[in-house]
Length: 283
Ligand code: GUN
Image 1 (cartoon, protein in one colour):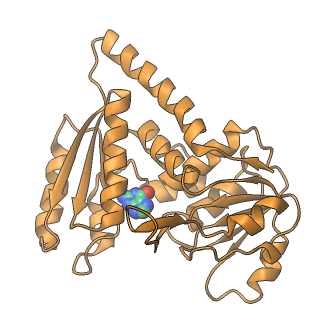
Image 2 (cartoon, helix red, strand yellow):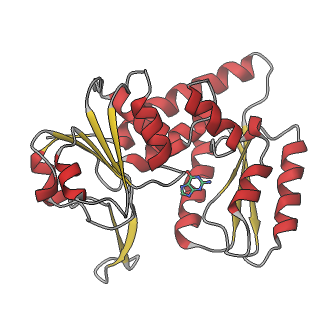
């Protein structure tokens, strides 16, 4: 079993971006500028946006964190996005999800200018991705592709089973792994909450991507020997022995599944840092 160390792999990407920033500045150009919009006080979202902003400063990007009240109206949020679209100083915009219930994700995603949509959520960018055209790709699936590439894993002809069909991870992952690229060229099965015999599909997987958001859902009996495991889950589970009061759990029961795996991502320090590295590349 080999760990797919996202923390380590992300350093390679961040180092190359740091060099690129130095080159841009030497050419008299401006440094990339990411604007992150955070609505409300969701603890996990605070952590993720904090990590994104911190990474910007590590690699020499400019960043602006726009913090908005949980109660902000949809119209006001759309106005903020329009201002960022029109701000020539801002190169990339991300609106952290989930948004409060009174705000439409769809309207917000559609409001971000496709050329600044570093999350790759705008329908124009999703359409281009599906057609295999160059565009922004959602950061988590792109980070997973970069991780497979970093470890020189040849996925050609493999059966990839993805559990979870979200627009952010499962759906785009199915497109990327089935595309004519390497990593890619897999035969893909996209499983979800209505899938019959989920265990049967999982046991056929050469690559299993767990992205359903249920801690330790994938158990040892659900995978075959030699599987490649990509664990996208990162759920806070109460743990009174820790100072924070919680532990981070993946969607995979690591203790049971790791001994059967050829490769496996840890949680944390697996997919998470690669998501951020991909976002930085897009910016
Ligand atoms: N919430 C969970 N993942 C993501 C992501 O990749 N981007 C944004 N904007 N919100 C998220």
